[in-house]
Length: 105
Image 1 (tube, one colour):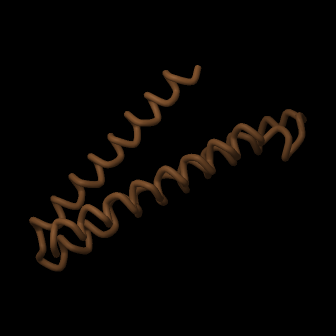
Image 2 (image 1 turned 180 degrees about the vertical axis):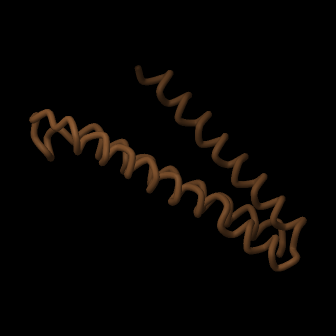
């Protein structure tokens, strides 16, 4: 697999993680409006832990899914490159969001 294709896939996976994190953040910020202000001492932690597990599954799949498939297919160098490119693009997204937050606070 060519580096350009790996970089494109890494950016798409990173954007998928960004969108997922944005949606979870949106849900958590509006949970009181959705479910009401009633304090539920039992269900709230259950929902939070289930959301945490779902988040680990989703982000793990987006970040590690294709590199693991490549690695198991014998394309070890491409797998490591894709994982590195994905991590790098997530870092770039983090820096961009940090700059935006700093400039518009």
